[in-house]
Length: 368
Image (cartoon, rainbow, N blue to C red; front, side, top):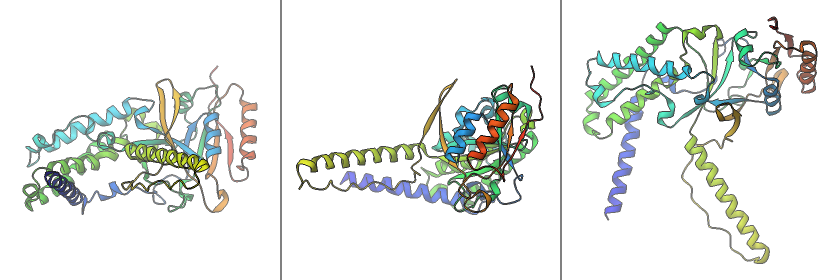
């Protein structure tokens, strides 16, 4: 049957593409790029700080989670355009100067080439800072609104139970020379793997899909750089990012399937009320899903509705067992400093953050 032949050819192409992609990814020196997990002890500061409003603090405490917002809705649009332009410039130059300049004909490099949104993954980010009392951050959260910076010790989290799935903590790079070197290094390693596969005849064996796998592997190798490069002008922030990669299509598909199953079950239960012998609904074989079953939520902003997900960071042992590892809270500049500081302290104590959580006032005076 023609349909069977077409299906077999399609399945063979998918299998070949997976094989090629695995070969590109295997035995690469930058293999750690694909390993998403908790950072090792000693790599991060003892405490990292998340700036937010008191309303944000209330939500974080009650949910024991931080809100990770879609990277598309970051406050400063230059946070992505800067990385786009730099990666585009360096990759294009590096490939043009390589032994295979014709690669640019096979893999057109453009701005946004390494943007994870371009190949299915959607990054959601929580921003942290090394400095607990930074004027630029207080300005961002509105002087007079009693903002706070929340200090947490991520190293106290159990990497197997307390660390969120498909998430990585990464330090933002502000040094333009270092950024260029990092991109060049990734491209050189990818070129080495490409040369090896070409020598093995893989491009001839899988002519129709070889360059698709090559392009995808290069984009994936650069994706974390796209998310962690910022303009040197923001250097004082000393930012770290908790990045969660989400396959939105899979999450939405899983959510739709759950709704459908619930509707079928509700209809069946309603029918059984009057027809006790009503048969059980037929079992539906769903394709395997890699979705986590995340609740994609939205919060209003000046730009419209911003999608976000909650990322739980809960300790399972020690002083903060069952809670966030909240070791310090800094009360920001406020027009009602004394009373808002006392209410903040009381709020934290009511929620169990007393003896092991330091609460202190900002050293930055309020401008009147």
